[in-house]
Length: 249
Image 1 (cartoon, rainbow, N blue to C red):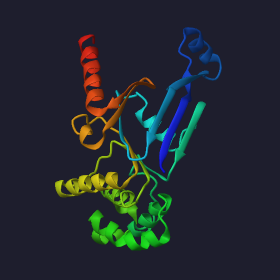
Image 2 (image 1 turned 45 degrees about the vertical axis):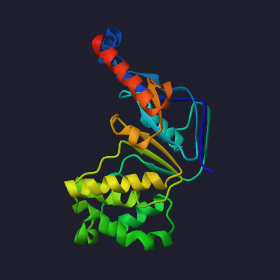
Image 3 (image 1 turned 120 degrees about the horizontal axis):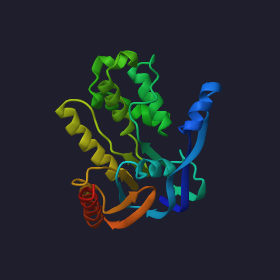
Image 4 (image 1 turned 180 degrees about the vertical axis):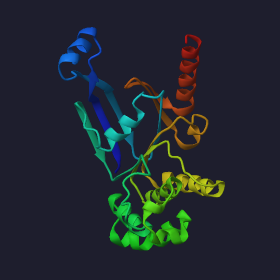
């Protein structure tokens, strides 16, 4: 059975910052520019459990830690401290338009991306024609993707990535590119994908539509969990915090 558990998880990033002091600037005239290594705490003391059947939203201001939390659950970012346990196959949908083999055709890229998402060769054979039709790219699928526009690349990646049957679906503000007809189809397809998944964790800024997708929501700020509860209640709490911050700005 699918489950996600985090216990006292910290995630830190190490960055190099230029030495900005007057002494540092003067020294830089005589020797190589110096840098100062510092750490940024992206997540701090995060503890949560997400059970099978839950749809959980992640909200908060930019830099709150939403994307970092998703990538920690996915195993992309290892915690500096604490423990992460995930039971179930994860399908992370973060950046659709990356990871293409630019000299390969659209069909070849469908196969490669599907394999990376955990689909078997048999599943790909059964679904590849439908993926191609949904993309609406027609004869362009026979061409190298270096000939595609950014919107066409996004269509191809979206069509492939949403053909999986995940146990745990991790979403980060998915947006589809294209005309109105494709965007409408993409929304319907995403809704169907979320229904198929056993667990959904959805980071978003779309507070008005979030209650339609998620019964539970977690509010993050500066790497901390501020609140965790029913979506409508947490959204009201976040909007109140935003309004208070605007008054003091």
